Image (cartoon, rainbow, N blue to C red; front, side, top):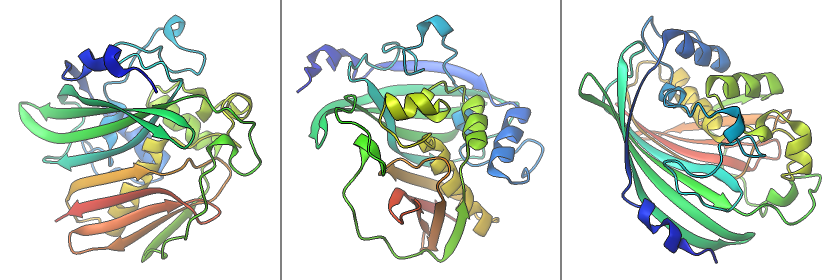
Length: 284
């Protein structure tokens, strides 16, 4: 097990940052989502993830393309870092061109033994405000794990999960095929240099994936966009998601949605019908 005592001081750590979502950046996300903009200063779902991006100097990147450990997040030595899920509450629409102030808090650092070895979970809470008005709150769950110890297999490599009973098809369905162009454009929008999203040789030989990995936040954005396409007049007040397994380029990804009394239940399924991500939407 990992000794968490060295990370104990990170719990409760706070950070204040400010950024502005530019209109052309929001238009870029609309283009990736293949949707028309909602208005001149409106932002697509989850466009705030295009703000507060780490502009890490090239010399400070690790071999995987991520910034080296440290900074605001604890310097966990487990090499693989993933965004496992999140919980968001939307109070006001995010506007482009207006400064966004973010307060961040490391709420928890905890350890668990997984099927493939030790895991470290870091929970980060964010509050975003524009002109002093709360826009949204967000809880992010980040997981660190060791590098894969087995050779990649044709189906899913060292990241293969047990087979499961596929969920019932959603009332709304949309199939798409993530390709390297989509992943490149999203990486560019989010200034994400993680090599698993664009370097096929690295993703396959170093991390044991069968192909390029679709960004978890991109899958979450596609799911929320799937709801908004079905309910264009609804006001989204909450969104919760949890990643279960990676999706890969060149393989069909199907978005499912079923309306509920409070919004909708969503999930994304891979080409074998397995759930990649679950999500819930609250809306009025």
